[in-house]
Length: 86
Image (cartoon, rainbow, N blue to C red):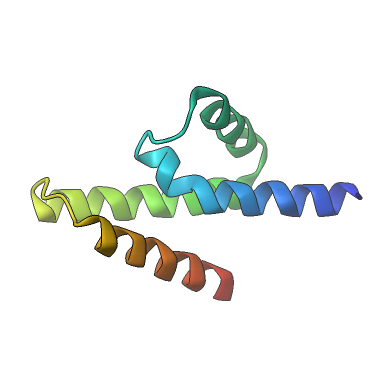
């Protein structure tokens, strides 16, 4: 596997897990791998920053309401699809 393919795979993995990372739903080893990747990869860090800002905005305006799990899954799927189109 070339370095470019490895980087693409790593970036894809990080982007796919960024919401779980933000919600502290990953085990420590996975979270640490994402932290290391974000330090080294500006495009993924930009994606992380946008997702973090969106999460903060939603939290601010929803007053801590918890979305039903099916709605949360649907939103994550839609965000992933939109992200692929960018």
